[in-house]
Each structure stands twice: as structure tokens, then as C-alpha cells.
Length: 281
Ligand code: AMP
Image 1: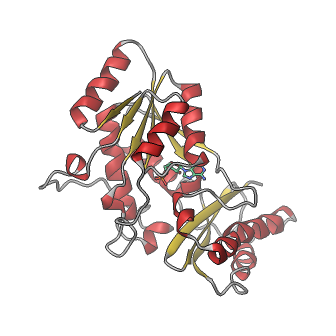
Image 2 (image 1 turned 180 degrees about the horizontal axis):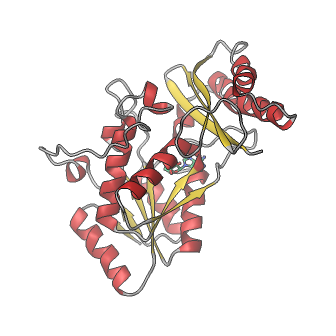
């Protein structure tokens, strides 16, 4: 396994792999790896010949008052985990390598980047699409792996790839959860014991909406109401949004006649968590 820090070396390594006829799979991450990330790596192992993981805490997807500086960073531990999973290449560039002074070009998926998390985190998805486009240009993967955990990110990246004719296949892997249902996240490490318990409200709200949906209710307003109600009895959790949207366009749907995404975001103290579930008729 090689840990690479420069764009030139990463491009050379991926081109060398592809010149040998290997199918290159890319797993973009911000590090602080957990089983959710490793599930993407395993999918990449199964569906490509050479796996490259990227570890880059991308400053452009964080707002000015967000957790960029305190985001957990542990390249040594992450590298050991990735080596055990059979990853060949780790790309872990410095911020200055990815964003040299004077860079002024952005990739924005208009009309989608301001939906869901994009509404409360202005500029977040612009940062995501810009860095993912850069990683695609640098590594030139045949296939890239993303988690359903970030369902809006998946929809926006798919749209970017389609609109910009990027020659990469996008694969999406299911959400990996803790035994009690909490979606795994690098940010779960911020939670104290009380917040960890209260954090289950997100998954519970989605489960309640899903139960009502399975009992025959299709009206989004009613499904949202039952999900939102879970937060009334949890003063430690501040709901950001609970929405039901089309999984491709991210536009709200009034009734769930086709598969729809129930998506939730909430704050526990300063920690912002997200989760979602697919409602499929
Ligand atoms: P991050 O390091 O948070 O930027 O996540 C990197 C990738 O891992 C993204 O594609 C995420 O959607 C995915 N991911 C994060 N958490 C999970 C999870 N619990 N289950 C599945 N995929 C995840």
C-alpha cells in the first residue's frame, strides 16, 4: 500500500494501474474511518481491481462556524485500517495541494445544492462537488463508491457526473448502523453519553414515518408530522429538517407514490447529524 500526498504522484499511480488493465475503484473520504467507510472499501474491492481511498478533510465544504478545525484526523490509524482491507493507494493531500492560492473555479449543481443540508449549510454541496470533481480528474477512476448515508450528496454527484459527462460509474452502498440503529458517522465521536442516547431520535423518527408509510399512509405531510413529533419530547435534540423528497431531484414530494427519501438532520449541542431511509411503495 502506498500513501501519496501529491496530485502528480496520485495521477501517475492511477494511470500506471490502468495501463496494466486494472479497473480502478475510488473511495473518497474525510478519514476518521469507521465501518461505514470500510463497507465502501469492501464494495470497491469486490467490484474493481485496484482500490484507491482518499483521505482529505475538505475545507470548502465546511461553513465558517463549522467543525473543520476540530474534525477528527488520524492518518496513521486510517492507513492501518485501509491496509488491512487491501487498499493499494491512499491519496492524502494537504489543503495547499488541493487548493493552491488563487484557485477560483467551482462546480455547482444548481437547483439541487441548496436542498436539504444545502439549505442550512450554504456552500456545503458546492464544496463537495468541487472536491469530488477534482478527485475524479486526479485519480481518473473507473468507478467511485459513496454511501447512502449522504443521500443528497449521492443525488448531486450523480447529477454532476451526468451533466458534465464524467467517465466514471457511481456505486452507492447501504447505510451502516450501530447495533441500536444510529447511523455510523465520524461526528458521533463528538457526542457525550447523554447526546449519544438522544441521537437515536433521528433513526427513531425515520422508523416511525416508515411504520406509518407501511401501514398505508402516503401523504408526506402526515409522514413528516409523525417523524417530527419524535423530536418534541427530546429537548436535547434540535431538529434542522425532516423532509420527504424525490431521491433523484431532491424536490419535496406531496405523496409517496414512487420511492421517496425521508431525510432528517438535527443538532445535539454543536454536533450536526443526518440520517435517511428510503420509502418504497
Ligand atoms: P465522510 O468521510 O463522512 O465524507 O464519508 C465518506 C463516504 O463514506 C461518503 O460516501 C459517506 O456517505 C460514506 N459513509 C459515511 N458514513 C457511512 C455509513 N454509516 N454507512 C455507509 N456509508 C457511509
